[in-house]
Image (tube, rainbow, N blue to C red; front, side, top):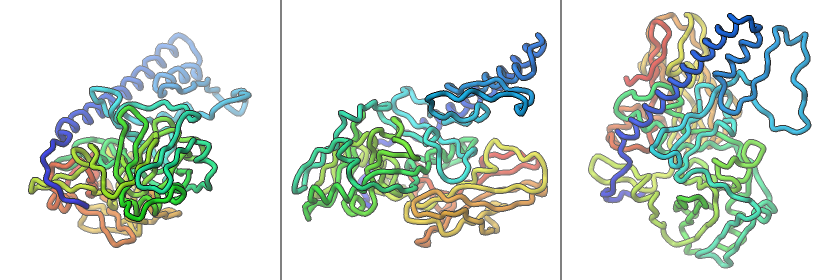
Length: 448
């Protein structure tokens, strides 16, 4: 970690927060409009003697996400033939499942984020189509037969690899989380976004398949004096980041597979670098070049961006690791508890340092804590699902979770984080999140 004089402007936090709030309002308005439209259509068609099943199908279509295939719903599925099986198809989820990513509404659709709907997540793996996404110049469209990976710089033998060459090497598969360093950026000063998708939706876990980067580096022969590696993407932004050679040799992955199939275009098809536990932008997508050198390359993305400003006017550079973090996904913002009694508190925890050792849950804003159960498997550098049974008595409660990883690091409170970092950063926010349960069961974002 390097402490450098801070003189270049960062993204303006207030402007980013404004845009994110606007995006969240647009998504909520769209959902309300879809539901209202669906209800109006239902009533109109029912009034004109269209069957209940047909009216429901049309109402469902009004609320369905783009691209959904809407099928008629029989009154009794056990007394009707199902949908014919196609000769060839790509499997689709049910028309009744409408959870989607939401995009941060920037002035251009080419440089933005899309947020994973964590409130609807089950288990630890994120569906490929719901995996969060960050792009700087849109989604690159690349023909894999014409794509090459170049490895040069301080190596014995510079090489050029086709995708066929890469796939000839022995492969591995690993469950790994990726988190954008800007995740939770709106929550430094006051409760800002309403849902866990807005506050924490820039993290996802996938089953990544590919070739260990160390395999390629050993073949080209890294010179002993080489200490850094530059990873460069083939998109319009030519995203570039410096990576310590120790990390490159330890566990980085040249990934071409995600969740049992080829990586999606927005995730870097046909090849991306996966850097376990490090901030998301270092997982360079559409990877085309690796260059070895004896010092970091000081690219735009590690000087004027992706550094952490401190209260003394300096900024920390190369703060790669995403520290231990957790969030309760259910119940969470904008949900409502329908009644008193049993509810399961559930959420996700992760750490870029290693494996989750323990997750504690508080029902009273951090005054007391209970240890949650961890779903198996608990894997290093991977999301871990935690659960705690809860009997809600109908009174106001403040729910929190805190993660402890296997290095002994404990997720800090927001006050502890701000005391060290100040409030002018947009990166590496891993403070404890609070959800306020009101007496009417409504759930909202809170700072305590």
